[in-house]
Image (cartoon, rainbow, N blue to C red; front, top):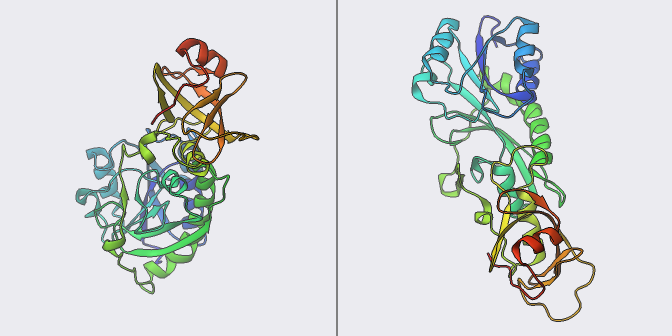
Length: 316
């Protein structure tokens, strides 16, 4: 890139700062403004501290098209926008300020995993590998031509958090590979095959967030794991199941050691010391349970509060 060329970078958290290191270092870019989103749950103050350390102008806004952001971007006279873990849709009034357009990091392989929460969807869908992409922004939802993609294994113990760590590492490595050839005009973006596209939208939850004990154990386990964000707020909620007198949430489940006798999907075998339930091909132990108000309870406490007993049926 010509040293006089300038960038605006919009994004959040450690992925943003890692990309800034690459852009300012090996990619030889002039970063003139950083825009963050105060509503994205990341390490508080990380991006701001980085910008202050290196003398980069920065601001926080929930709307990248706000008058404040548009004015700040316009004053930079930028060439290119780099979107690095930005969850907001970038619209024409912002994009038209960049003569060379915008590129975006997406945490899924395109075109099959456009949209939000794609780590959770990949786990729930039973994928054996996942990947990340850098693409040109065209105003749609992750629909622009692709600059490059990088895949990595999705293992049986991956959660959205562990996939996020893999994805950020792959995303930074991929940025180092594609950025300079793109700005030099040596890398031609490849249009996506719209016929293969699938967009996961805000509010969509794998399986509707409902466990169905007519499923085999592996499918039940994948859904619980797909919604497991550890200590972070759960954007998709928790896996839930109903019974005749209420509802409960399931944060963890495991295959019980013994599956003696005939299986009857959804039947509770025992409530103490653990809640044991039949599914299609195994006896399942439900662990880390929540009542409808979100309080974590033991199976015995839930049984007492909700009148659960052996022989009851759990339904989707």
